[in-house]
Image (tube, rainbow, N blue to C red; front, side):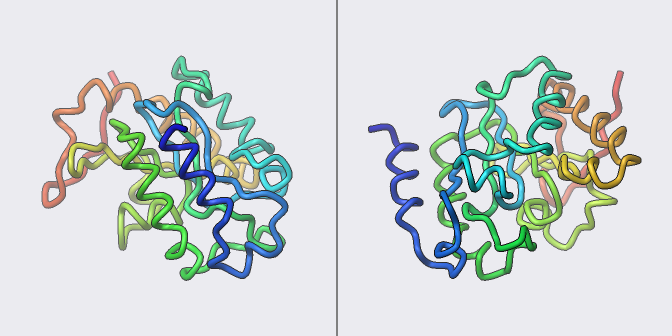
Length: 198
């Protein structure tokens, strides 16, 4: 059994949060175990809860469109969320839920060991870019312990606020440049830079 399959089995048995009682299926994540890029969203929604797969609803379709724009397919990357069970009525994840699920996310990062982690939305951004606001930090990269962290708005934001769609598309296009300039991405203490496109 692969390390990820074993982890998924453990996640499926997890009952630390109240929301475990109301979920249809746990949504651990999916993708290549050796993925170079890992996308971390916020929480499963209704479609994800039904299928046990992350980003399969309208936001997921937009994410697939974004991946195509940089020449990637869904199965080449790894996609997960900060929390692994759907909060009732798609409410925002609670701090205790994020904390309870943090072990699972840490282990996913450890197993996959991606070159780059792309945070989708403010909850996943807050974990890796503490005390920053998404409107200021989106489209910027920072390197820690050999991993590049890149912040983006959540794809669902474009569905609610059409004006963000172009911003999200433009940020996505920066990913290939950031990866190719990996050595120039700032470590903490240095100024995180807004990467220019050629």
